[in-house]
Image 1 (cartoon, rainbow, N blue to C red):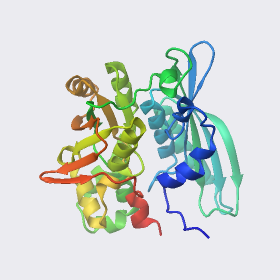
Image 2: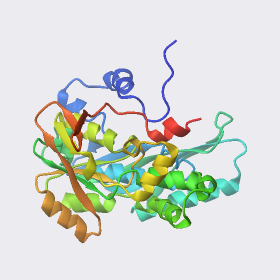
Image 3: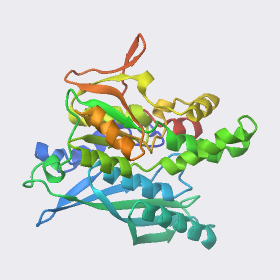
Length: 338
């Protein structure tokens, strides 16, 4: 008997050994297509189809519209245009039609806001689940760049390069903070001002990164990675690991809202490992120009570090220094998985 798996995103070692190594990785170019948030399929005539799959959003699983936003974020950060969704639902035997109708209404509304059409999917009832379980497959398109070769050749996706500045949009843990405020409303209402909790709940409306991804794509050659499960620390590791570069990051420069600080302190949660849909990490050689371009779109952004040609991935906090750990379990699951 092996050890039980942790809740949330599959551990990196398990993903590598049990899934990725069993896929067709005969060439390095082909291997590059695995392990990213999107998969690409080229077609004759210069078009490339992009696909992504989302089935879990920590703390917001009961709000399926969040799945549509997460799918659009994955596609946009990969340089694709989000276009459509396929929805797959498994419902418990005691699920009412009214609940299903409201869930679908929220998902369709969120998809339309991201410019995506819900094409269809599959729905079934099962005694094996205790609450509605939704899974979405996001579909997008990208212009083919050059001949069919590596994943980067197919889509124009650029990886992080040594010397790139790391620009982060908005704030970390927006979606995680909204989930805390929405799911623990009564408890938090006895501790915090109404205005603070209202602001925290409103962070759910900031989960999309499609606008800043478009702005970064139009600005010039940029590497992009949307923040999601595991927060900013997981995003930094994944972005650097995929490119094979080192990092130097200043913890004090990572933007965070006071509402997030307050709620995370209350629940003893590390905000740097909390679900962070709503922020986009961008690698660029022209950070000042990019930040100005994002500001024109109404998106705040800040330089939080840089990529290096060394092996170390360093987080500095004043005079203190630590090395970035491999991706950890998202704080939502660590704290509330029971």
